[in-house]
Image 1 (cartoon, one colour):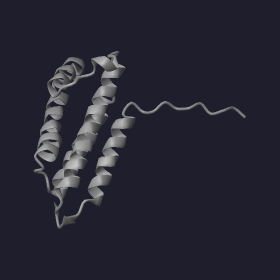
Image 2 (tube, one colour; image 1 turned 90 degrees about the vertical axis):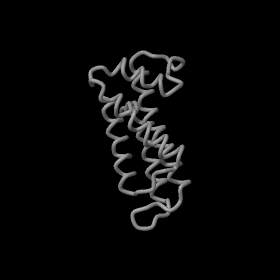
Image 3 (cartoon, rainbow, N blue to C red; image 1 turned 30 degrees about the vertical axis):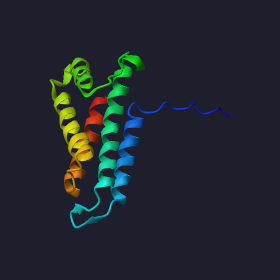
Length: 136
């Protein structure tokens, strides 16, 4: 019997795992009606979801022959490299990244301004769509 060949992970394996972890954090967060009542787990979930977006971008850039040392270290560097390597999307991915940065990182994690269950679901879905687009 032949040994099965190990499959290499999908290009967005870590990114999807991080996003899944973020959703699990939100599932455990206390809520009343349509609002989360504890800011800390929401901030943690937003931070993890934002990291999933960065992981997807890193994986994409590594597939474009960048070395780990050349990966971006700042949000401006991410924006620049998305514009440079994703020109085929006519700037749409740059705008989507900007939206995810503003909502997940700034409003959700840094400021703790997100509390609406439906709004967070929509933002997390946008992150998942971004990961799917950049992983193609």
